[in-house]
Image (cartoon, rainbow, N blue to C red; front, side, top):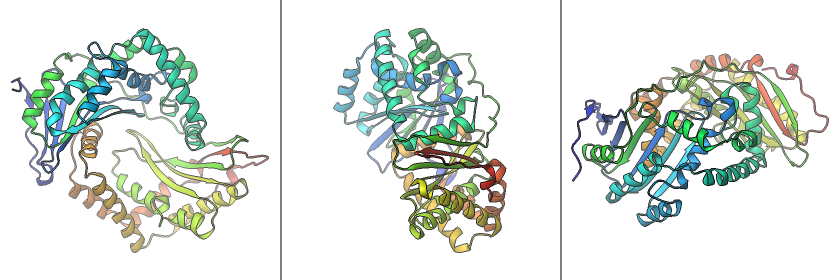
Length: 440
């Protein structure tokens, strides 16, 4: 039987499309959010740490990712191999990741295995041993991961761009850290950084699927009883970083293609203009019908891969265009991209184009929320960034409210020549580019 514990609960949300979302704060301060999806047989649950690599000092760059790896190396009651066997025994899917602003440990199981899954997930997160031997071994693993990513040109061009775009700021440093920082990690450093991050003030537990909130919360309370309430506040947030509109040309003779990344600052994740920005991105390079894809790949055959993407963070963001092409085509690709920037600034998009972008975003959003795992993630992100939950109807109404004039206005705000930053990676030879060539 589930234990009975005193809980500080918010009223169940009564908005029709949010009625299945409920929140409870445990006595130790851990916030638990659930969404009931009774038509499923699965439950996805995740422990979210509301900080990531951008909350690190330069000396311990990479420690968030390192800790994420280290918790899988065994606890006070289970070895790493025991974890693997027990997760497989219930047909579970255990995963984790580290981002610029979050760390997440998640497990998806059949609804009948929720008690076991909670025991596994809580043990993983609350009782890691961080033995010196395991730390030394994992340093070797992550150093190889760093080398592997440095051999990936798509990853490397984005990393080079980011480091130059936010110089001297944690947001510009790599999530994995560097060979120097990772090699310096000791047990004392790992324990101290773990203790600073893994507190109720910086954690959110979310779950979605075929579950009952009250029963589930009672089980979470039992599983996380050893997580002590602390007086610590949430990790302090620095001021938004200053951007650097750089031009970076990096020669790498072993590459057959030139990797191209052109970007500007963009609104943060909770900006009132976020839906307008997403629509601008969709029209520019968000799909096969987008302007950049049609102009550069379909009409001229200059690149195989060409797309734009919006990357919002809590206080800033980027709108970037990526392409891979031959060195002989790079200047033409740049000029065609800038031409599309100019065109969308000078002329309003057609209603047909705008409707297509709206339908694309709404379709992707709805399809992306059809699984318990995606709903679990959505709960956490909405809580961490907004402290409230948006129904699909609310979001689609906001998207439908965006006009062609709104798109033109934000394009003129963002796509300014003085804000443009460019990174090229490849066998560039004598190629030179100046800011005078980057007008739009």
